[in-house]
Length: 124
Figure 1 (cartoon, one colour):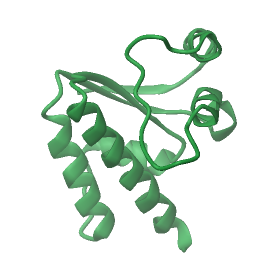
Figure 2 (cartoon, one colour; figure 1 turned 45 degrees about the vertical axis):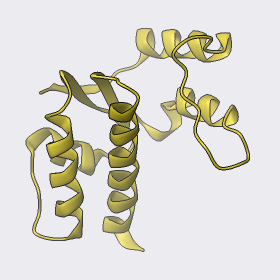
Figure 3 (cartoon, helix red, strand yellow; figure 1 turned 90 degrees about the vertical axis):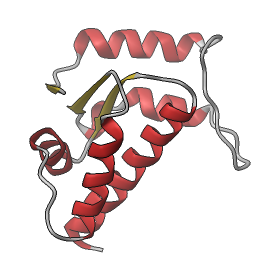
Figure 4 (cartoon, helix red, strand yellow; figure 1 turned 60 degrees about the horizontal axis):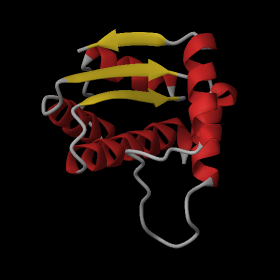
């Protein structure tokens, strides 16, 4: 798969998440990822002339539809909120969007994560 393969998968997940956020009416988002090279490319609006660049171009085009987007690098081991949320994902295909009734475990982890994390931020 190689290094670019990891970036492609992360970029695809980012684009998917942004489309879902738009579809559900979210206009302010914080995109976190553990692929530092992708986060830097998004922050610099760097679209290489390859398949990854196509994904980045789509992501950046989608970001213009939001009121606010930030790109944040989170170390893989520090992304406990995403892992906890994945635990609540049903085993059948579908999606889970919480607008209300977020499990306390997720709220507690997100609050702790926000207070203790060191992230690289870029505000568009």
